[in-house]
Length: 145
Image (cartoon, rainbow, N blue to C red; front, side):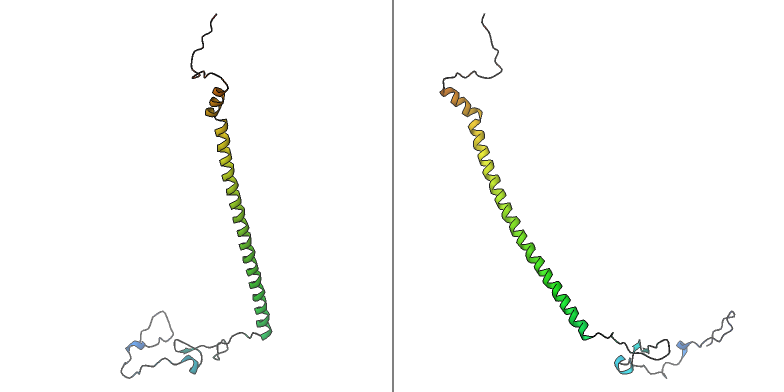
């Protein structure tokens, strides 16, 4: 069946779906390596009309060697950085331990000092020297005339 549009003056291709399917054999997809470059069973063509092969860029051996040396040097620099960072971390942890120990000693000495100059110690020393406890500070002081 041919379908024509009144707007177009060119011939319309026949509808391929209406063809007799029994006369047509199913095609198997071909191996792309055996038949050249294919995309969904079709050959890929260049702009000039010839079929082409996919080719990898040419890499010269000296470039590979230089690249390997550069990657090796970068790897060595990275490992040196990692080891230096680990050493700095060990030093920081050691200093942190020393700081915590000094802080504990300071707090112990501060507690001892506060106990020595605290009110209970002062009252005991005053009683031993013969002073009399005046009692609470809220007492009314009476002066005799």
